[in-house]
Length: 154
Image 1 (tube, rainbow, N blue to C red):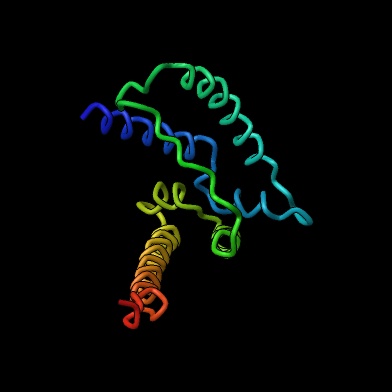
Image 2: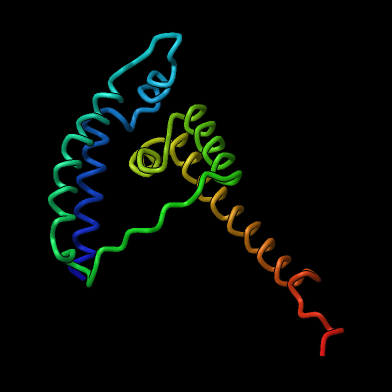
């Protein structure tokens, strides 16, 4: 329960930070991505501010024997850069650039903006579509002749 409360508090702080910094406004994000037009560097300063808070805290945190709400630290192994990662990143960037919303600002803004709500619903739909497609691919791989045991072998 403590971990859940901690996650909710961290999410609320993050959401308030998005609103206070103006990053829940899609025009600010699109302005940051407009390198050859009216470039708005404010998102870079928000990122630098976040990194300057997170970096020393994460260094301090990883020196601890274990996290406060878990038995051990859980760090996923690095994954190689593959076709799926590149395609997914490109689709995410395209959606971010067109709408000006990535997931967190879309959640924060969805209560007051129909465009943000539509972006959020589209993101969730895209996630669902990916999971559906990946599930079909996993099933197809399990049922492929190469995955089946060879019936000619004793």
